[in-house]
Amino acid sequence: MIRIEGLSYTYPTGIQALKDVSLELRDGEFLAIMGENGAGKTTLVKHLNGLLKPTSGRVSVDGVDTREASVASLSRTVGLVFQNPDDQLFSETSEDEVSFALKNFGFSKEVMEKRVSWALNLLGLERYRKASPLMLSGGERKRLALASVLAWDPKVVVLDEPTVGQDHNQKEILRQFIVQLNAQGKTVIIVTHDVEFVAECAPRVVVMSRGRVIMDGEARRVLCDESILGQASIIPPQVAQVFYMLQDLGFPRDVINVEDARRFIVARVRPG
Amino acid sequence: MTLRVLDGLKFRKAASPIHTLDPRTKMLSAAFFFFATVLFSEFLPLMILFMVQLPFIAAGRIWKEWARSMRGALFLGIMILVMNLIFSQGLVYSIAMTTRFLGLLSSFSLFFLTTSPDDLSLALQKWHIPYELCFAFTTAVRFVPVLANEAQTIVDAQRSRGLELEKGNFIKRIRNYIPILVPLIVNAIRRSLDLAEVMESRAFGAIKKRTSLFELRLGSGDYVAFLLVAVGVALVLYARLGVKIPF
Image 1 (tube, rainbow over the protein chains, first blue to last red):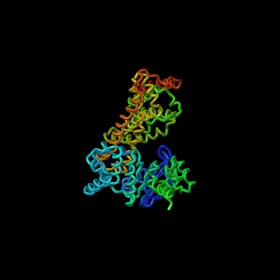
Image 2: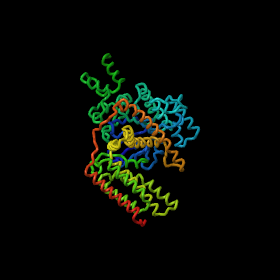
Image 3: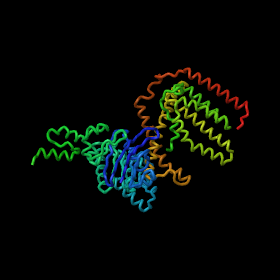
Image 4: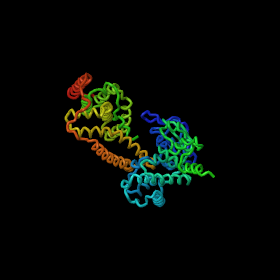
């Protein structure tokens, strides 16, 4: 359970990145945080494992105030996967990369070995076990960064821009993977611009703009609200745009993904 | 967090009498402060040299940035103090050495905070230094903030994986920086290769004789500054050679 109350944050440079943000996240929820560049999305998630401490307001993770806990102990619960894998990969082999965090968290050797194999397998990287992370492709590096966080099995997984630089197939695999993680009971938070990706995942969506939360609700509702999305420099998913234009034919407005769209159209074309 | 001291070297555009001085003038003044500070090891002149810089920092309206770099250097300053005390150089001498360090840093800070890298490059070209070298220099200066930002991101990413930089004994603490330094260096190398390709695709070096949009010209402020530096040099020489410094 993550509770954010009246959170404001000002960087040492004087830029106020978050203004009075309040948010509550139950265990097992799937949340997408969207918003324009500089809206404060990354700043917000950096509060969840204590990398940043509130200037005012309060953030608590499972009842623990983030101001009173170390980043290391909070990270045990909240695993943060950064946008650019090149900002974290440093080991000689993929295996070492994944075990780095496990060592830091003090896992025993046997558990560590098991977890490393499990995580590499989970993301299809088993054959690169002994390979240097620097030799992997962009998509593989991104998956390795994800594996290195999932390895310690955090209760909450936060993914910052997971779809950037991934082709369609990789995105689809990633989507299924995230949905599966969530189905297994993990709380999943994604930070993204990718409106089509969010439409297919259909999680709860929080829209941020200029440091504030301007909307919070189900994907189906949020992604059809053009005025709110416009404020955050987001355009609705293409399916939503089509259904917006079809509303005078009696189609519902709140359709955002291809599967639902197909259902409605087929129902109309073949009545009964 | 770790690189706050570099904030004191980040140039920001502003309209102040110091910013509009010719870069060569500022270079001369910075050189004066540097050599004068190195020339003395007594507390009194070092403190005076430090204090003399303050009005210029005020005139340049860079208090905040300057103070931040000073605060960032505090730890190193204390180290210098403690080290000198341990090796029993006496309290006054130890304080003098700390003041010297802060004075040097402050003069660098004053120079870099008020001089844009472009101006600096123009000044170097005036002295017939090859353009490629000037360009390399400005690029290096310009990438300092980029590198500092990136270092911060890397520190955040590794701390999120349970790295605790302040944990362990001395050796362990140094080893803690490996996960920070490796990505930082690898990314810097990658970026420099990219930069080289980008420059080549924009025809860098295609024209042998370059002209520049801005020309450096000395103004009245510069002559005032020259005068001040000349007075400063005279005073420093007199103090060094002519009088006995009490402490």
